[in-house]
Image 1 (spheres, rainbow, N blue to C red):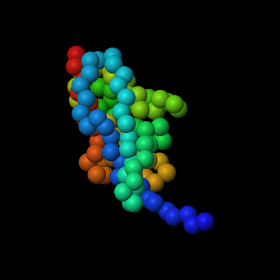
Image 2: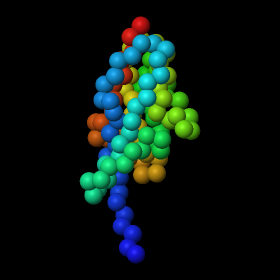
Image 3: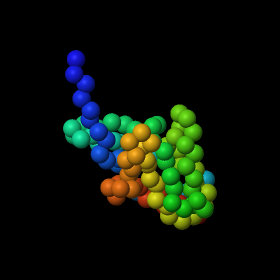
Image 4: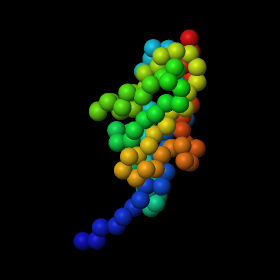
Length: 102
């Protein structure tokens, strides 16, 4: 049996844009793209981050890692980083934009 290494080369967060009301807890998906062209759902494996802590926070809770809790109006960038490989959505410009309405 031959085991081949198929490295993660890109992480894409979707949906790319989302608009919600303050107090909502939207969820995002992280899809990993491997060197072979295959894809893998990494939603519960990645570490999520938010660029504007006054707008939203990333819960990163086991079993519900992709939940983003919104706090107030504004716009935030939602990013995902795979802690195993170090590959993240920001490196390829594949973050999402979250707009929170008042």
